[in-house]
Length: 137
Image (cartoon, rainbow, N blue to C red; front, side, top):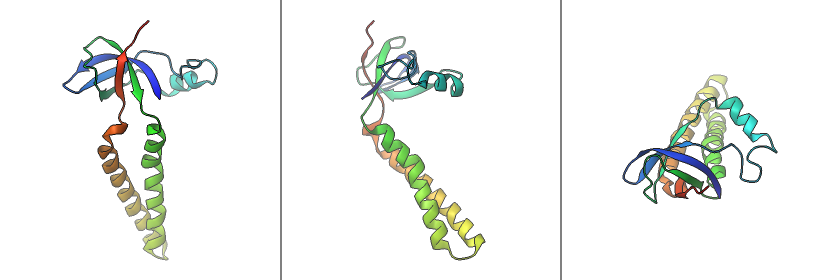
């Protein structure tokens, strides 16, 4: 299970807006060994905020531990990247022999793939990140 520290900046009934407060990387080295902290600094210049499930009803200002279920990241990557790609190639192959038809089929397949990925993502609520507990020093 992936975990990171965050601070609650907005609280709703069953969810909360959080902003990351810990270092980047896994708990093994906190980004000092593999370089994930440097990649985060390169591509993420400002802290990002996320909406997560608030199962423990944390309040604004609480430092919490946010968890992502095992396999959720890999399934999300497959859904967002692989599914539209498969539909794009399928649309290009099924559209016909001419370049114009293949391009139109590829664009149509890509659009269908993205819409299907969005629909599937909205239905998979059990894969959403959630606040597991309050962070302890």
